[in-house]
Length: 198
Image 1 (cartoon, rainbow, N blue to C red):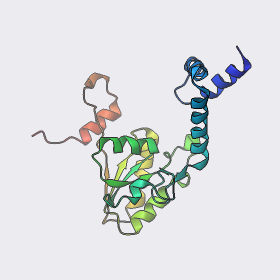
Image 2 (spheres, rainbow, N blue to C red; image 1 turned 90 degrees about the vertical axis):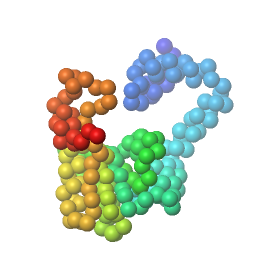
Image 3 (cartoon, rainbow, N blue to C red; image 1 turned 180 degrees about the horizontal axis):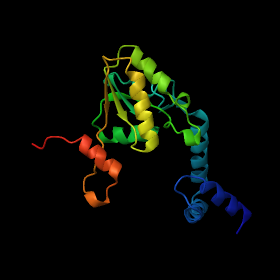
Image 4 (cartoon, helix red, strand yellow; image 1 turned 30 degrees about the vertical axis):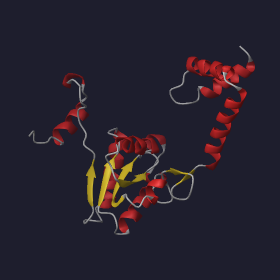
């Protein structure tokens, strides 16, 4: 295999979910593309990596100091949905059901990976709540052990603000899942979050 091809395959396979076979297919596809298109792609990636910013309010990705969501006058600023990563924010936005603002933590607490609360944007969230404009904080954090640890840590930090309602997204069994294949933690959450059937 060509050294140049090996280098490209090696770099592409560093991306999450991309194994060496897929990286090879992508490399060959790049080779068939017009040079100008490949140039546009590499310039976009380079600009994205070097020029992207984090919103000063919510830590979302932005081209400017503040992201479009935080600048949108039609958003409900009294509600803040806390998510781990920008991808989670995008997933919620894609539903078109949520009209509040967000707060991106940048990960979850994970002592095994050396991620402490101080490594996340939790203090900035507490500052937003302390400002007095936030009425509800929705915790939309994964149900992993690290996610649960982060959720409880944030809940404890927000106890100092009794007028602020702290909620968590519903957790439980997904639509179409068979009960016998669902893990115990998910079943526990489903039982705890049960609702009246009407």
